[in-house]
Amino acid sequence: MNMRRLFTTVALVVPLAFSGGTAVAVPQSAPSATSTAIEAEAHHVATTKAADVCNYTIRRPTLKVGSSGSAVRQAQCYLNRAMSGANLAEDGKFGPVTNAATRRFQACAGIVVDGVIGAQTWSSLVFWANGPDFVC
Image (cartoon, rainbow, N blue to C red; front, side, top):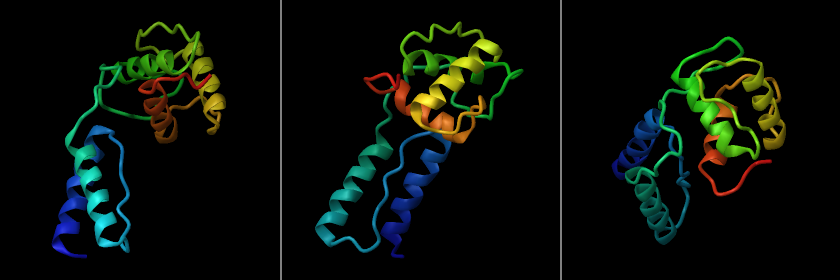
């Protein structure tokens, strides 16, 4: 791996690991012109931070019934913006109403329905909450 590609990879991975951003894959065998375009897009993604619709926290811990705090508020905010009619109180308490909304979201998003907000659910929540459409 050449130094430029290594630097680009590190420059993308480190900020994304801490910001919950979107990764852009850079193929190893891409032709020069295509590789340059991909690297330019990756640089753009890494250096521009889109505004998040919810701003309680950047932490993404695993959440379930009984969890509380700013990460639960963040998840409740995302659920409200990802689904029509969610109307969750963003109170930071993961109770039966948040559990039901989480399960509804997971079913609509086509991911594992377990009522737990882990890595897969966080990823889908961020995508749908920050997009223009509802998942359901």
